[in-house]
Length: 195
Ligand SMILES: [Cu+2]
Image (cartoon, rainbow, N blue to C red):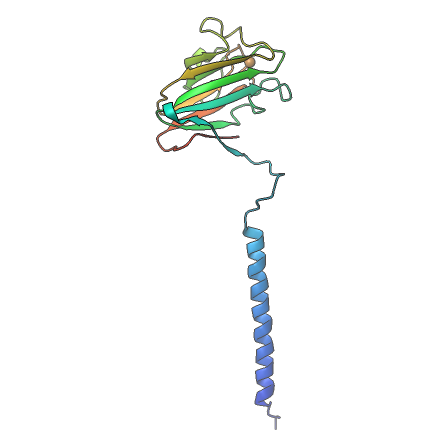
């Protein structure tokens, strides 16, 4: 004959089990939230950063400042190369391109409506249509640019939807990595850069 378990003992065991299960559930939910909530203090991330670009709203002009940095690889723009940076602007905006050369080697900056994904010719005119020459001229861009410490400015627009480059026009420089992508789209509401 088995001994009957007292109802009170059963209630106590059931209560303890319920407390343990509930605690485990609360801890796991807390840990999930801790793991999944985005960090706002992470400064060591190496992922792409999004930067809002300044706009002169009176004439829908986005100001794009690019520098051939002396602290980065020879063929860089703002420390990026080979299309690592992409600039997005709304269709119909104008671009004001400010280009500064910090390097001892001469560089210039061209706006190109490209017809290939990456520069693959020494002369950018072979890779698309050149729309703007900054720090050089339409006849000298494959040879001449800004000397170290110089800044030049160029304005173009309104921009039609499409894909463009901002790239150095001196022979071989874009092929060596000196270019950023520029995307003009009806779907962009405010200019920004990622890279
Ligand atoms: Cu260059």
